[in-house]
Image (cartoon, rainbow, N blue to C red; front, side, top):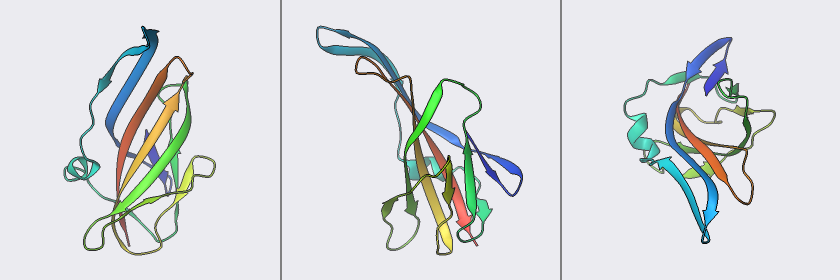
Length: 129
């Protein structure tokens, strides 16, 4: 996943991938890359400098089967830290209304059915200026 902002593409970091395909005696069979806390991943990431309320486009180009961003949350860094759900419109989100550093967790699903589950989680680190 990449972020498109001011005509530039910025990389994100994958946090977790899970895929489960079949039921066997009421159990899902699959595999996963286990996640770590988003804030731990963000420590090694560069900030993407953005302006208040600017639009960020989330691009899922590498796999045509990824169909939907189903959840995105933002967590501010520093005092009073809290996690807040974010509205997604046409695979785009607005930067926060207050200056500061923020870590986004983006969850994506594809080809999921009652018999299967496929999702990935990505981390984005913003510096709102």
